[in-house]
Each structure stands twice: as C-alpha cells, then as structure tokens.
Image (cartoon, rainbow over all chains, first blue to last red; front, top):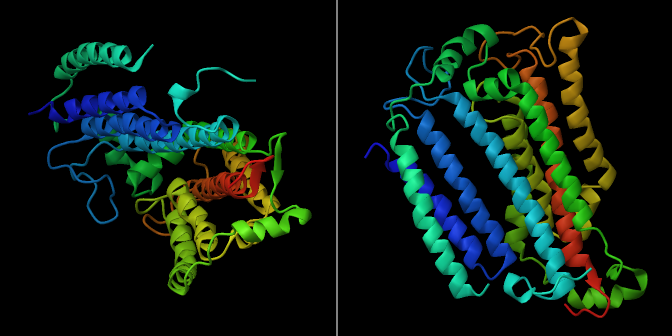
Length: 114
Length: 257
C-alpha cells in the first residue's frame, strides 16, 4: 500500500477533470478545478510524509525529533493561494457570463459574442 | 463535439493517463519514507539559525522569501483582475441611483433575524483579535500573514451578514482597503530592501533575531507576516466588495431580479 496516497492524488486529479468536461455550469467547473488542484495537496503532503514524523513545529518539542518535510508544506500554502485566486477569477467570469448570456451552461454558449 | 463523444474521448484518455501516473508513482519513494535532504536540514537548523520554531513560516518568509513576494504579486494581480471583470459594464446601471430607490426598496433581502445579528456581530471582535494573533505569531505556531489575512477579511463579511451592503461599504471604504493592500506589498519590498541597504541580499534576515519562541523573534519574519497580512486582508476584502457590488447592486438595463 506504499503508493496508495499517490494513487489517491491521481484519482482526485482525474475525477476533477471528469467534472470539468461533463459540467453544465461554470460555477461547477470552478469547483471541479478546485478538486483537481486538491490532488496536488495530497501529492505534496504524501511526498513529505515520514512514518512517525511530527509537524515541523519546534515550540513544544526538542529540535531533532523526526518531523515531516516543511518545504512541501510551504509549497502547499502557495498552492492554496493560487487556487483561491483562480477560483475567484473564474467565479467573476461566471457572474459576467450569466449577466451577458443569461446562462452558465457552457454547452448553451455556442456563439461567441463581442 | 457532442457529450457522448466527449465522454468517450475523456474515458479513453483518462485510463491511459491513470496508467501512466500509476507507473510514474510506482518509482516514487515509498509513502512514509521521506528521503530528500532539504526538509531535514531546515528542521534541524531553523531554530538555531533563525530563532523560528515554525519551520514552514521560516521556509515561506525567510529561505523562500522571494517566492512569497511573487505569491503576493499573484494575489494582487488576481484581485485587480476580479475587480476589473466585475466593474460596471456599459449596459449596466447601479441600483442605488437616486431615481431607483423605490426599486431598491422592493428588492431588498429580508432583514436578518435577531439571532443572526447577535451571533455574527458578537463574533466580529473575537475574529479580529484571532486574525491579528494568527498574523503576528506565525514565527512560533502555525499561521502567518496569509492565514491571518483571510481571517481578518471575513470580519466585514460577518458585518454584511448581520446588516446590509451599506454597512459593509461604510466599514470597508475603498481607499482604506486599497491603502492596506498597497502598504502590504510595498512594505514587503521595503523590508526586503533592508538587506540590500547593508550590503546583504534582497530579503536577507538582517534584523536582530530575538529570543526563540517570543513575540519578537525571527528578525524580519514577523514584519513580513504583518505586511502579508495587510495585503491579503485588503485583497480579499476588495474581491468580496466587487462580488457583492456586482451581484447585488448592478443590473443590466431591463433585467429583472
């Protein structure tokens, strides 16, 4: 089972992608993209994990206690910020599409309008 | 492409992609057996070299400080993007134009109940204190500018829940929010230039490190966290403001609610 967490990341990526391609709403697409992105959280944390490792916070525990990798956790923070910004931009686009076209279903937006 | 063919194409590609990913992941280090040297080096040296007990904050605001500046830039640009996308369009008018006040009255959402008002308004104060605590203690415990900034940005949202958009606008005046955001970004750059001014690198940790696990520890890190907290809180409030204004106040000509 040593690659199970990695496979979970692959599964989240693909299930989110399925949501994107089968979606009938731009709001739903933004949420599915968040699921796709959450696969990167699982992957990053899985790579940095160590059996028996504690969180890399040394205020209460002595330095030298086996701890998980702080670098991937810091990268994950960047990842979350990027996700928040992407979702905000997509939702802003969805609001404007609803106003301009009266629908948020990508299949109903067949013609591009200026 | 119709839906059936699109799904067929997706499933065929997904099976292939999953097989490739599983093959690639097979050769990753087994789960739980971390190998890379960097995490261990940072875990064993951060407390001595930087007097910071939260290794993640040390990575973000010291070792990788320049990347975090870029991250703040991403946030800044996306807030500009959101406010630009949600600005008043040519065919739109604002509902709070004086001659439309009657219409505004008609479409106003029902008053929030007393229970909602009491709970949300009661939460605003503790939430602000908690946000400030998270922003300023990133060097000791989990937290920092990004997390605390988001918590601070939710305080005006609670005021909106308890009252209405007018109250929200009154407590988050545009100029105040914009100044906070700009001060956050430029504060980050200015703290980075401290290093340059004494001949070290940009964003080098040049301030006294202080006593480990105390409020004033970690040199420039708490200051960078405060700058980031300002920028994030300002950015999120700007984005929330743009969304609320666009969805509540603006209507296309002839559009009904």
